[in-house]
Image (cartoon, rainbow, N blue to C red; front, side):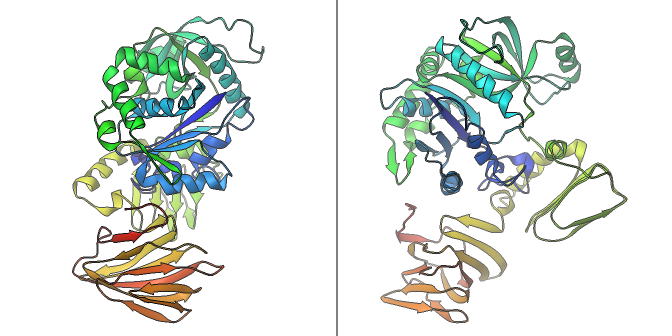
Length: 478
């Protein structure tokens, strides 16, 4: 049995303003109709002995992750919630403990949730090779056959070919002993790797038996193993989620799988992979992948251009126009516009760092914010007031809650609302309104068959999202 471990904890800062901390790139449909997370899970269909996945994500992403898997009719073995980021090695460790909790020792295939792989036949053939090597206690990584002297990736140096004991089909890809891992090189060094051959980009994808990884982690980082063991053992079930113990997990060292285990073990193996792989690490990478018009432009959304070449334009909420420009990226969302030269898109992270320093909301979330019951969108705000459009899915409801600092007016513009306010429960329809006084216990529900849309006008001395005291919530939020 092979259990996929899907790592969905990243923030994707280089794809700002689309990717935000509370709505990262793996939860967006960047290369098709399905999100990157959904594509990661879907590309495993058809692999022999593949089981339902274990997903590791940040607790703030849990409902979006669960909903996207539900859309694929996927029932994960577990959705493990990280209370804080500790890099990939602890994430895989807790997933390994989860995979072994029923007394089995399955092979794990560890996959970041934000990669693109275009040739599924080659990828699945590599998985078959990886499964065989894992059976002989190898810790397998997948090395991407380099197309250019890339300085943005670490490299893996391959050595002698490994014997697969004749169990693999002739069509399967070979595996090799790892000689060494190399840090991200300068251009000259990367060029020498390309000319020498036998060097591969480090993809961050792995296969091994759960016990093999934990045994090596015990050897090289026992503090991490102990912290992750405690975090999993002391964790709690919360609806469909597994919450790790916050104190124990925070005590774990923060390290990648490479640093914690792969660079130290004598059992590392690499499988070269040439399957149209990309980690979509920048807007220029998306331009590389996307279909282009005759002028080399990628135009998504409401975009008009003239005299424009080799550009990437993406519009989300309004029209974009480009005149006489080349080699630039323009990305528009409801609250931000990015303009960058394609050669400088890696520096988007500098803007994100500055937004974080200034404590700007644009680094955290979009103007339209998804919630497990639907979404809300900020329309306008000023001193002591804020206007939102709230959409509630059929049959869903917000929590039973109250606010210390604000009152609210609700106007129904579409659908039917069931409103609880103090001891009164009433139904209000389109063009009707109600008032929620400051401090009143209240709840909004959609009893109908179509989405409920209301306009909410908040007024008060403080209008932050943290001024919510929940008394009952169907989604387990405190």
